[in-house]
Image (tube, rainbow, N blue to C red; front, side, top):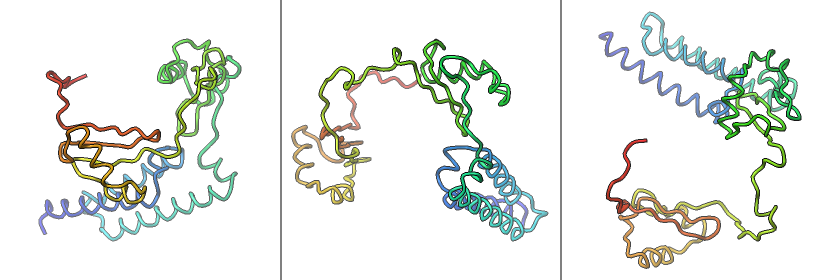
Length: 236
């Protein structure tokens, strides 16, 4: 077999194997990168890369290595669910960097977390004045969680004693890409005739609708392919 064909086949196989492993390991490994997840991702990526283009290594050896490492990762995740000590060892602990409005330089030094990192993370939380912060915690996935002082927190309806419309369900997608999502209609007991009548009120056909969702407050949002914007912005 020519080397180019072999590399093509191995690359497709490596990509497929990575997809399967990602599905098996779950969403948390992708969304929240802890110490263990970081090591796991690098190792799996290195093995998959060798599977894709290193023709000197046998395919079945690399597949066995991927399978073994995936089993180890799954076993570690299972142990972490059952044992708090194991979870702390594998994932680490959150670290407080601001307490009662005071920066804890000692904790920052232990993490090698600079003031530049802190300021950037605060700005990403829409905090430009550090005096507004009561507590700030670096989570195990590296993100910063911020609790502002009471006087700087966003006012809610409850604070102002303003009544709010109750919501009892998540938004339900009804139309996507010009096609009705019949499964959502059926599971939520939404009559097809009701949706059809709502479209008729707006002089619309289903194939003219790009996206439609029924909000938790009962409001129907509809976006059509024709936005009726004469000069749409095509760049930031």
